[in-house]
Image 1: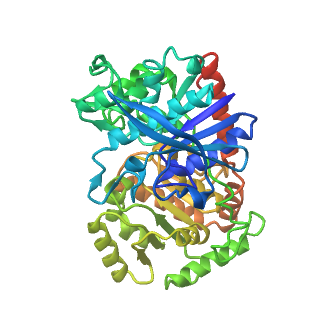
Image 2 (image 1 turned 135 degrees about the vertical axis):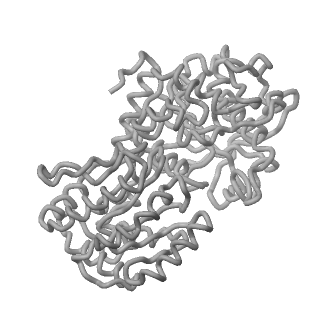
Image 3 (image 1 turned 90 degrees about the vertical axis):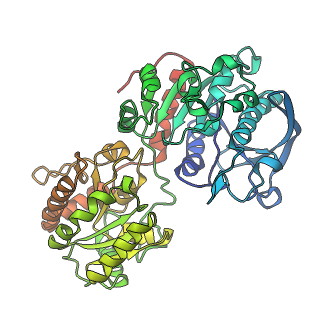
Length: 487
């Protein structure tokens, strides 16, 4: 099949979050299954054509924006594994310091910027006479493409057999703009109604995709169910309820080239399931780095997170004393709300030797956390995917999580009687439930033999993108033929 991805970011070209990581790996894994794969992203300022060795493929590319026309260009880059990346160039729209906005807020013309990008994807495919079987769109920046395929481009020979798959990475980001943005899209005013892309007095790129994509994918099975509820639906739950038979969850994978404790040069000493004594050396190194007592018998728990309420900080703080009473050493890495910065700094001063707070982002330190800690804490209220626990398991560090979104899919409760399970989880979003999970974890850690077996076993789990890509390939095949069965 011919699979074309469209997204606003992709590693190594541009990244602000997990979306860039997904696009950096998934297309190549899909290509390795024998499919012909291409990716479209904007050509941002940071992507210098000369530095990246880009080839100029189309100049000019004429793009209709309402009653106007704009000129763009298409560059290309061949990636390892046979994936071709096409970069949509328009200096006036994309040659800026940041991708979506500054500290002052989003760029006010983001509607125009990403309308141009979406029309450019479709127009470039026409010019190059590429006839994709699947257009896999990601997040609101590509949300109008499924709408265009069923309206303006419905009779275009290039897209006669094209089906669309739309991935929701976080439903909270919706691409909602004033009604006058509609004239720039080229769509008729018949689209501005509640049954279509009107959303509380605005037009919503995301809503368009939810209505018109042939299939909707989310980043975990649990999240696919949660977004159908009012609590997690972000106002789109009724729209998604109409399409519930087309909503599928596929848990994101890990790039095993980046996350591999056996070859990781950023940790104290590489190790694998057969050399757990070397993992212990990482723990001792991390204890010393944080001025803790270097004792393997003391459970060391880490947290790598944004410091915001939705990440569970509000239920964690009331149980911190219980955590220390259980004998834990606690290390924190992250930034977020200033009030939490102050609280954790003060706590670290009061609990010297048991608590250390690193209020910063440091990718190498995060790796030292995953390698050196015995457990990692993720008490989030909501988490669409949540790579943290998967990274932790890869490094033999046991997760303690709230059972939501991808956290529920990646972590199963450990049963010390049977030895089954991969971590510790709690359903109710409360300090009491979190404290109970911490107590279970501390008790399990006290059984050294059982804990070592658990660590060795979870390191062998498969969270690779290759497994994930096979699931997407089945969804693409289903989109081109008949409806897939939900598992």
